[in-house]
Length: 326
Image 1 (spheres, rainbow, N blue to C red):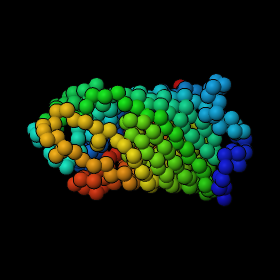
Image 2: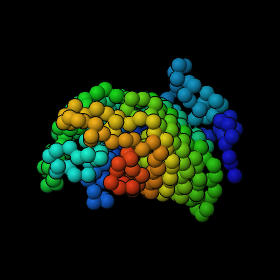
Image 3: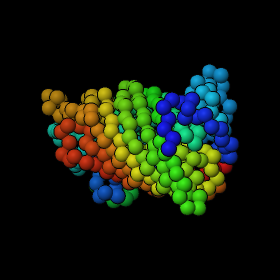
Image 4: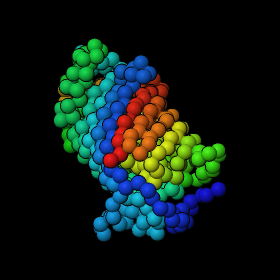
């Protein structure tokens, strides 16, 4: 049993990393698999992750190699779009005690450092809510194509504002044991913190994985319902597969998609305000397969309500990621 008390002990062993490939990934989240169209209802993400890099001097403290490990470091750039809606998108007037319409179009820069016993990611995210997110036009277009109900409340969405955050995420291997062939199982801790005017929170949880090449793809699956898989964090592995299940608890300090101003709301506007639920939980179940060229990830996730007036206690969604190495 390997329990990491401090980073130097966790990363004391060396590893010859095989993967120096770049990764291109497309991911889609949607709540349609649960037959709903509310809350976090859709997310689209396109990312490019570099091959192995040697960190510049200024960025060396972000690398596990700075602390004595033989790590594989990468840089990822991601464009993303997220969308939240109330429970009744056909209502032409705002509904009290319901989630606001909100969109977030953003870019994200990640510094990734990988080792079989620890994987970590530092990120900076910057984007726009409101009309600058184009969420109203995107949902109206998609719904017109697929024949879904026309959303009629985007005039009351969260205001147009530049928002962002900085974050840190780490996976710590607690125990990994072989089974048969090249398969094994693993238990790890996943901890994350974010700070910004988009969201600020801290979370921690446990993940169980079963599959092959677990040391080489460690850290690629996260616990969450919003884009929980990062293909660019597959490191020392040319082919593999795994299933995963994780649960986590989170304390959220602020969330503009819930607490942001809505200039279109009629007065008295405070009658339509909702209250952030700071204590939250999430769970995810997924599966990943890849070879030396392409791969796929599928997941289903569930989470507790993120605001106190929510009509339901639990919300869910699912998603798919398609990725290629080159």
